[in-house]
Image (cartoon, rainbow, N blue to C red; front, side, top):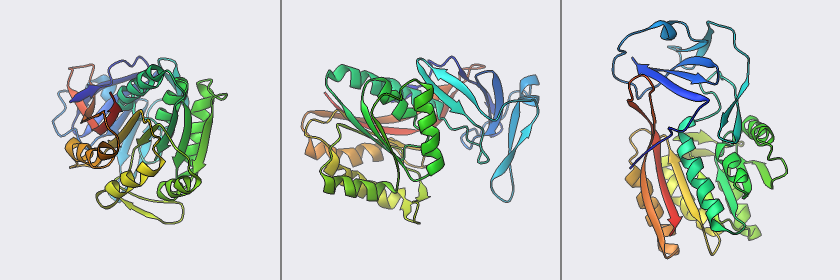
Amino acid sequence: MLLLADKWKDYELIDMGNGEKLERWGQYVLRRPDPQVVWPMSEEWALWKNPHGHYHRSSRGGGSWEHKKKYPEQWTINYKNLKFHIKPTGFKHTGLFPEQAANWDWMIDKIKGAKRPIKVLNLFAYTGGATVACASAGAEVCHVDAAKGMVTWAKENIELSGLQNQTVRFIVDDVVKFVEREIRRGRKYDAIIMDPPSYGRGPKGEVWQIEEKLYSFVELCMGVLSDDPLFFLINSYTTGFSPIVLENVLDTTIGKRVKGGTIYGGELGIPASRDGKTLPCGIFGRWEKK
């Protein structure tokens, strides 16, 4: 299954080639590397040569932005009624993964369609795209990430979208330790979202390696799942991982615990406006209540 994030107005994937992508974020155009773009560029036309910012990788690792035209340190873009701060960072990211809009729409529909109060746990929650989406649909959200700066950014996005009166808990913590504590506290959630990195470290040096930790962590999360769950979503950007891996993990955890759910997986993608080619942007696995 391929889900396309093709309902954006403030974001546009303009073109791709030679390991790079050309994108419009609001009124600013950025040129960034992307390892999935292994085909040649058809033509390095004017906008390729003169974007607002061009991120260059360093041979020593990391990289830096070349500022070709003036643009602010941060600005705001909208997705429907959701608002997000965009800030080009020193590690090429902008603070938002636009392909996730396909998941945001699905979450919003599920929460609104439930016709009951829904509590969502968002793990490895980054700058809170899913947190904003779920809060906008009326859910109570617990947002957990090990990076304090990302949690601060997520708070900004909630306020930008006018959702500061929604119930959102922001937690800076290692996700495994947090879930273990929630189990001891007896807290339950109707929906769980996770976007685990391939490799990462918690605030106290805790090591996360997805191949070794994913199954046991999803199994751990069964301890905070309510008796009437709505959905469980796993996203992954790990190269070489198949959506079938995520389907199998869900099947052997929530699939065995909860009767009457549907499990499926697939890829997320964004179509380029110049030629319609799809940029693959990671995989997902979903369990949802029928």
